[in-house]
Image (tube, rainbow, N blue to C red; front, top):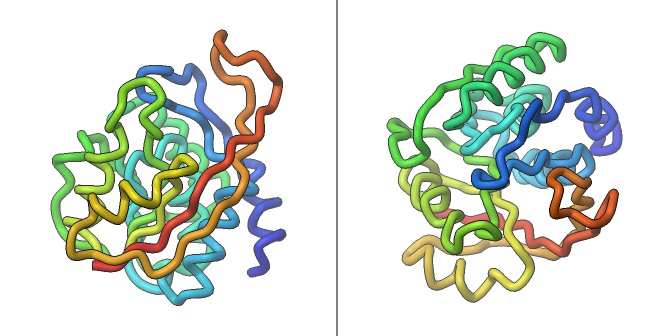
Length: 195
């Protein structure tokens, strides 16, 4: 499936009913989700098992399944977001398992993790538990981070290595009262990390 077609399909995904600023629940835009997933697909990393850590309403998990992943599981702490994710999977006609748990409690092993973790805007270091769980439970990680994160991630991942990374734009829609623009373009970095 071409990236643009995937993006158009993912635009149908319902977002958060009542997003939490404390959890940094910003819906991953379809254009960015399609970009990350197509990146993983072209590397052959969506053929096996895939986990989406902090899956929110399920856009990355659902997209991974649409691109042919064998089994996909999305994990999130927010039960209401998981209800929306389940509805989204049903509407999109894909079989994705959604699990309610804290990110640090994830067990088992998956081939690939896809995620858009918190950037730490509300509390510095919010992305660290996501990176730790991803590295502990998978062979390869695809992750979106705030611009300027490369040095931090290189140090933080220890023996793992960044195989690819690049800068891209995140069209952040007005989500919370403190947002001043309808859409603000945020510079982000997309990473492929291998253990």
